[in-house]
Image (cartoon, rainbow, N blue to C red; front, side, top):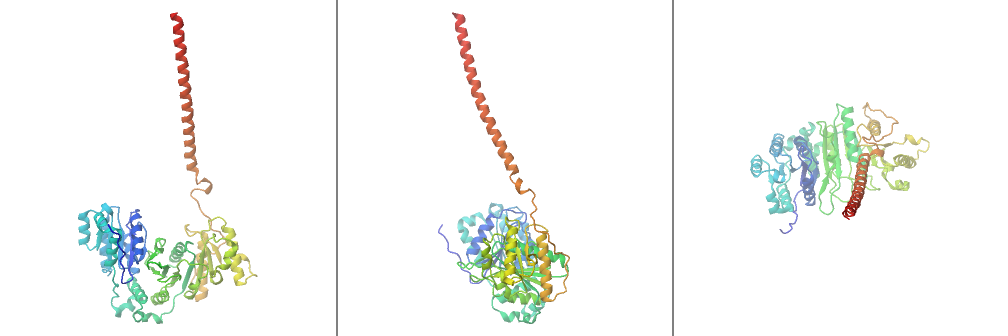
Length: 474
């Protein structure tokens, strides 16, 4: 089979990818979503073990043209049929569904799914005939259309009612430059905006998810929106919008989330994030979180769109002099030193606080008063993250003149990793196995020596018996 060239879409194609509920086999969907991305699409990846509702809600909020699923757990007919029905019931009949499951999905089941409205289920025969790129080209070509906007006369009213589909369509209009369709949002009173930025891999998405979870618990009557930005590939124009993999708290009726690709190189924000903030403010969300793409040392774009900014970093920043190069330390209202369980975290906390103190000329204040917090976002009910959340609420209340109160407390308790197995015992079972293997080897060696000695002694005994028998015959 000759290598196929990637299809070039004429529109910005957004595809939601995931593996189905109770399915941990994500190797196939990971291969497919990488090829979809390299074909120039924006891929909103959810990972494995995702329910129909999670996938459908995501596709609607993201205004995607397609959903691509893999299913190896045997429930594909019910799963994909329910997905098609749920999309149709929510007015999203235009969203295409593509799926694959190797030999798990039988030819008769593929026919049944196609009849139920699933756009295409790719079989092993399709893979042999079309190749991986050929299947993706077919998927992207069938998804290469502009999603419908719906009734423009009622768009403003639907956004006001916080309809996820209406909000998604309004944001897409902004991205397509159709500013006249969203003119209704220009007069909206701006909602408080928390900006979160930081280096790639610092745990921004996990920390954002923990903040959202605490907000939902702490403010039961309020609603929150998340705008998450990931970088576009300069070579292909595609993008992996993977923040939802870490976002577990956003599957709530009080949360709206939209993923953006930067669509430019070397920037941390999509230029239409400001339009999205206006639309979400018109929808009267109580708080908007903007999370930027991973940035370098010099980018401080986030301060242009937010009321309170937070910089997320890790203790592994290198020498203390590197801190002097980080522009956001001069601008951030709060700093989260995430992954605080790393070695040297306490020294890093002291160094970052000193740099924050120097950049603000706050030498008359104790070092502990600097708003730098050690956090472990991956740990449930982490005390450092609790303190950070309360500090965020206080900062927003002060900066935006809000009358919010919080049940979370600011404490001096440090984040400390809670281990199921202590670090000094992490190899405990391995050491037992190794000791057993060493003992077994020693036993085998001694048994071999004993066997050899027994054979030598038997030989000697046999020779002595023959000699004695010969003496008797004489």
